[in-house]
Amino acid sequence: MRLIRNFFGVLQPLSCPVCGSERISFDPLPEFYLDNARLHGFAYSGKGEMISLETYSCTHCGASDRERIYALWIDQQIEKKYFLKGSRLIHFAPEAALSKKLKGLEFFYYNTADLLMDDVDYKVDMMDMPFDDESFDFFICSHVLEHVENDDQAIRELYRITRPGGCGILVAPIIQGLEKTVEDSSVTDEAGRWRLYGQNDHVRLYAHDDYVYKIRNHGFRVEELGESYFGKEIFHSLGLARTSILYVVSK
Image: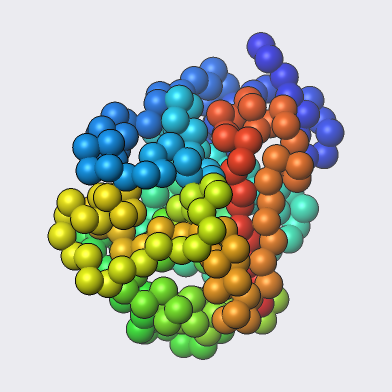
């Protein structure tokens, strides 16, 4: 059995940090996305900062590349006692495999929220959330802002509901080498959105510097955690693209 060193330098079996499977293997990104991107002339197909085309999902639990890096970081923070048992966590647009893991931990006071999903604790519009100020210690908001009409208002709301000293995983699709965020509110048709954004339900395509500036502009501190933070061997063994960055914000 192959071994890797964990965050504390201890040798441990290689496993998916979402489901714990020790014989990890991966499936590629579904061809649907690449085929439609090519069909509609999307100029940045395959250039996402955190996208592993050939090692996209865990064959055991279906967890995507981004879910694996989130789960790894959360496990590390629990080990370091950064999170305390009973911390209030709100998970927006919860990914199925990651949500199952977080519920199974029985560590957080865990709730889910989304505007369109049925099986969530709260139906919410992120631009106008029904939560009190400083309600949560930790949030996960992954691949949501690119769907939201007013992302500035959504970030303001995330800041409002986060307690002082709290933090969040705040990640959106970011294109390597893109100099300026692409956004055109006049484009509402499916083909046009595939062409501009690489997906028919997206309303913008983020450039790295614009994205980080936008988050900081609303008061959050931003940490960018990449391969140098987690380690090259762990990135490789978990099938993560070397350009992947985990954006952790704090208040």
